[in-house]
Length: 360
Figure 1 (tube, rainbow, N blue to C red):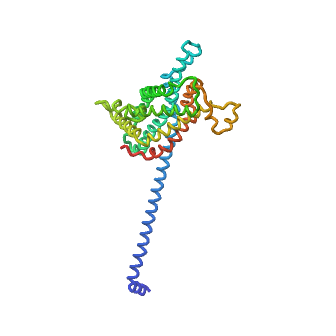
Figure 2: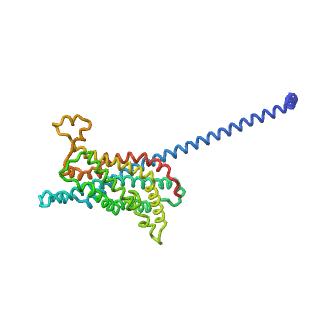
Figure 3: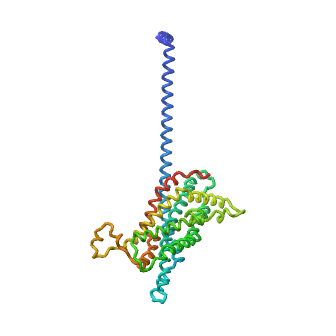
């Protein structure tokens, strides 16, 4: 029995060798394919988890941006009202002084100046804080990924505080410079308009557009930089100006500030800022439009879609309306103004946040 089996194997030895090699090859190939499929699945799972973590980090960072902006708007409002204090003029008018016309002229300039400055600075605050917090968020994301093995954080708390404190330029020297330029433009555009002259919404919008043109043209002319100059000081006015004694944290802060300047000077950033400003001034005019209502007896204008274009108010009546807009623009309570800014920025800066290059 065994001899016959052995002789059968010997006669078909070549076939058995080929069959064994084939079966073994199929088995090894199956194992290899199984290992590759498992590796691919693990890689996809890791990538999915990484994307989910990035998305969660991004959403959390956006909520932080929104809360930070709302918490700083009252500070911005107080700073503007401190430099453009119209309340003292309105108090004088109530006492019926002899120089009533002169006080009204001053109130006209201050009212329009502080409303326009409020729109500019609020938009700048929203955009700048989001850029800064997104940059910090990118470093924190890398810290959470890299420092698990105990390495030094890329952005320690001291650096974050030092870096974010640069926002004080917008609330200080930057704001004062912006007020100076806007006030001069308002004096040129609105100054010659008589207090008794009636203005329609369209005419008022034309005056605002003209003020914007003067402000933004002069910003480039004087500073040779766009509006970003009001948001961050020049490089020589920062820590980079120190010739010696820089610590590691100082160097990291300078790096963050330079990254921010590069972003603020980019064409994409200026496109985003201009979009925000357009929406901001549109909202400002919409708020004023609520006070331009056709008279009840004017049924023709009331029924017309363009009825408001026929309504005009004396400039003296528009002044207190414009004067009070700062409380709507710089309100810490969530408003349409801040929501409009956040909506336009959210989509524009998502890619920047999710694709921050490795700063190491």
